[in-house]
Image (cartoon, rainbow, N blue to C red):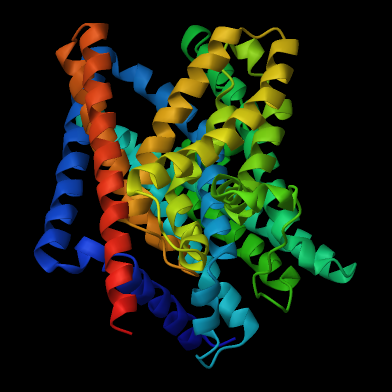
Length: 481
């Protein structure tokens, strides 16, 4: 294995990310790109300042911060599983990116290591960004001890968890290759990762709550495997303890990485299978054709499998939590408009942009309602309330409108699923800003509902406007062919 080839591939991945993801659409304009970058930095700085204020007001006793960070370390297993699943699914659809790597002089093993490093950096960045604000706030309020807790209690178990997931994933792929079922990777891998994520959510939630309860009330530190490196550092103490924990972490990571390389399959080309079907007679109408297109997409079938796994693997009713898994298809609105392009090009576009938008929204709502009718019945059989299901449907419809706006303004490229990342980040930034503002102002519920309704109206208006402009541009291009 040549490390120079691995470095070249990793550099290529980041170059692809910068040019084909960070340089698309309005972000191709340098001032806008820099403005968005500094806007995200300003939002993160505000998040850190808010965390500092919350830590100072809530945790008056510095001794409380250690159990909080340790609880974060225990629950980081779930967040790593979630980010790993998202990034892995993106790579399963990254046909163009994978094909481009074959133009470089590298072996399959080198390509595997490069993709692992790239994925690890993406997952690590997302995990650290999610938890670093609280860690920075605790470090400022408490001191360097909080930074050590974050390093050995949060970052270390997250890194080991990622490598364990990688070994499991590659081991399953190797097993499928050995039994001659490699073409089922597109079904088995997403289902496996969704199941692991659901199990991690269920176990880590209860374990972190129980750990913090014992830690705070009984003043004892029960042993949990996620905090093994932190316990090594505390047992030795001082700089030697930190060095020992780092060496132990490097040793475990080295063993897991070597195991991943050893069991990795020779063929690392992503394959996909469509395993769910609907009657083709639905395509007699444009609305039915849109339902078929949304249903047969790889993303939708993965989400449907994930929702079914979450419905049966997670005890939602025992936690008094609404069935949030019903609204998972709502987040596929990002791909909806781009997925409908073959249909729009196949037949003349004789209807208005508003009518097509309603059909596009309706096709996704139909899938979500069909899924909710089945899994909602399961939730009711477990003792759930109908009001919880209706609340989830309401949030799902709002999510469909917002995600479709992102998919129309930042349409994903074929073979480049990473192109949706910027749109998702911008959407989350806007939603988080408005949610924080509404929470800080403490407005009455009626006023908040009115503001949200106005925002949804703007989202619908800009979505219809975007569809209209896109169709006019396509017709103009066809006239000049």
